[in-house]
Image (cartoon, rainbow, N blue to C red; front, top):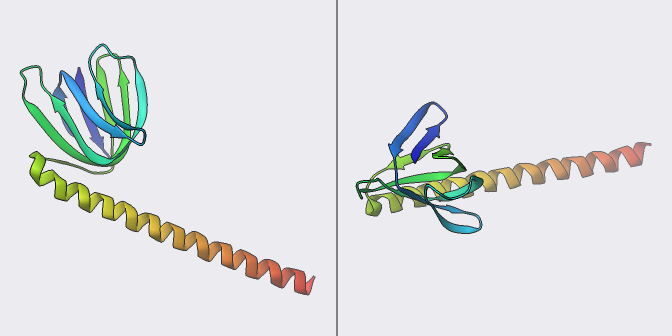
Length: 128
């Protein structure tokens, strides 16, 4: 299989692989060449792969989309970091914190919009 990891501005990784391990919101999974075609969301975590020669590689991704079609496995992610398994743990923790911070900011913005809507609606009812 050919594994390609895309980032917004570049191809992050392109490698021939014998299998790919990743994690979706439903849990961990392994893809082998003869598995059926599929598409799934990925959660922030470590994607691992094994080359036909038996070398194992690792890449931390901050979530994304994985598509397997035939002998092609494509991953689209905002950010990826390649390295040894031990050093990637810290990268994953940072990615998860960044996602949590973005979600917190989004929830705060939505709460402000809701409060503004209710305030304007009450003013409208009062004046109307």
